[in-house]
Amino acid sequence: MSERLTATPPGVRLGPLEQIADGAARNFVLEMKAGRFHGFAVRRGDGVAGYVDRCPHMGPPLAQRLDQYLTDDGALIQCSWHGALFRIDDGACVGGPCTGAALIPWPLEVRKGTIFTA
Image (cartoon, rainbow, N blue to C red; front, side):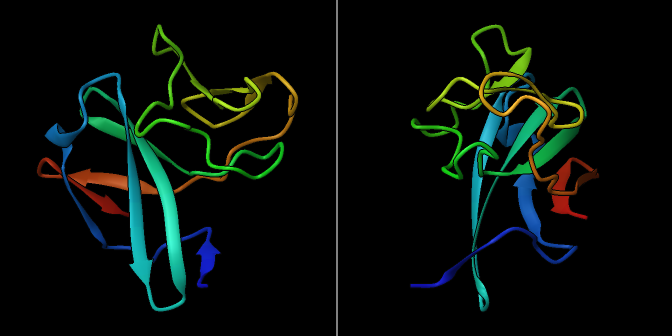
């Protein structure tokens, strides 16, 4: 079984920004020689915020259903297992069992309408 990674090299092309609806999130799994990386991106207008798909409370991926990372109103990231709530801008936990902790950032950038790792 390969190791679950918490970072990716810069310059990996993830695809067009349009693959994520504005105000929504999308899961990404990258297979690399060192192991498998699980992350997600949240789109806000022409930008994205990326995080490692791992809850700081107990370690599972945040979403139990594919791409379901946000609260119903789209204002916060929510762990579907124990209800922890995280700010989209910085990943800080603002409610639930891991208040004061934070998601691990996954640096992403948008260049000419395409999402890349940074």
